[in-house]
Amino acid sequence: MSTPQLETSKNRAASDGTIQYRAVSGLAILALALGIASAAAMVGPVLWLVPLLAIITALVAMRRISASEELTGWYIALLGLLLAILFGVAAPARTLSRQYWLACRAEAFSGKFLEFLQHDKPYAAHQLRERSGVRKPLNEALPEAYNNDPESQKSFAKFVAEEPMKSLLEAGQKSVIMRTSTESLGRDDQHDLCVVHYQITAPGRKPISVMIAVKRSLEYSTGRETWQIENVAVE
Image 1 (cartoon, rainbow, N blue to C red):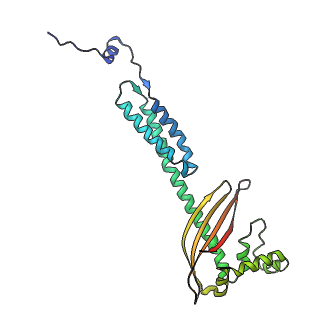
Image 2 (image 1 turned 90 degrees about the vertical axis):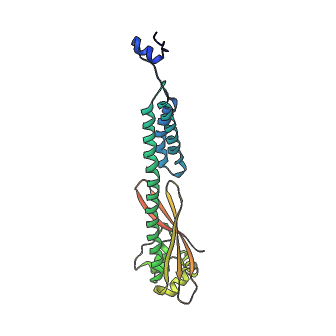
Image 3 (image 1 turned 180 degrees about the vertical axis):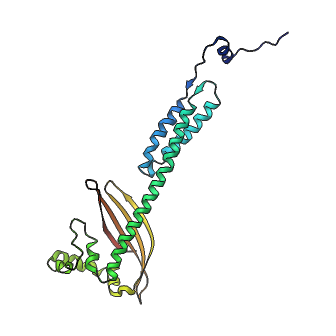
């Protein structure tokens, strides 16, 4: 006597030639949507959570589909997963490389500012604190330009009387300047702000810690960038 077999939907589909319908997983579609949305992570760290959420959703969807005979969409979830991984890796890499590039440029600009002071070029150093649009040419005629501009003379007198400008001008090339760290304070559509920290030692004086804020501005119409010493302070 033969053992009766339970007829399943798969068996019925095989016996009568019909094709069993399998629903597309909603989680798979959501994973794909989140994978596409992961491109937003390129904007900044605040959106890095999107790729992570997409990866979790995709993995859950793929696991449920693999364990089910009624769901499909595994490759849809896989595509979402791949997109999330792509943007999840590219976004931090882009941000970190840009921060490194900005830090190098800010260090070079602030270093030039300190170099002017060390080499007794206070007028040139003072001009680096001015916006590029009103900055006087850094040439041999610069002292004369100050003599003909009472407002600039007043600002310059205050500038050279403050630290660390005063100590650097007095010690000249005998001073020792050591950069200790650089950090990015943020950005908007047209500006980046970095802070470079230094330790300056002049002969016969205690070392002082100095913070130099450097601003980068970008003109989108021309693609031209300019740099400015935003602030100098003793910490």
